[in-house]
Image 1: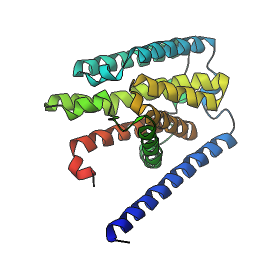
Image 2: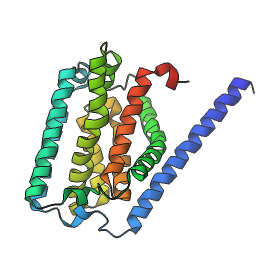
Image 3: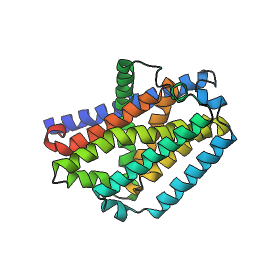
Length: 269
């Protein structure tokens, strides 16, 4: 066996072991969650009929918007489209917050925002994201094997790659690493998952929220990896009891993705 063959075999073995470790970590998280008392998340016993109605409305809206979108449309994404999407997302978050405030919910308590220190939140999110990567990469590889090896890059990735101005890149970075993690984690992990979990259990809540998370990105080649990513975010939130953990994972994931595009020679072997 030549040197190149040996290194290739060693790399494949390392990747396989990393994937096995990732599966083990997330199965361990799931087992710990299942061993806990069912009231680990405060939302479980408090979301009522009014929250179900609002969640149903949002699910219908997201469903129709996903069906109406296409990969061709996303590929032609403009900065103004991103800003509009961000404004809509922020508007939804503010509406849900106001709705829950009127219902006398304590948002800080429900989301676990004050549960962990900054350092613990960051380290937990980083470690869980590291072990989520092999699962995401495997889902991406499996998708390429099943539907073909075409480009799986989303519209925002194409826009960032083709950007010629620093202002445009700064806007994309802020939207991807600040606005999207906060808005999407609040909507999908906290509210929708919380409502579905309350009435249908963790498994259905995890699957439905991850499906919606993947669907709203409206890019079929990325659907499976995004579903896995969303499921990992949900497990991280459920296990830690803090939405900041999944927000941190989301922000770091988006930051690494953009960093890899900005400095491909540095981050790629």
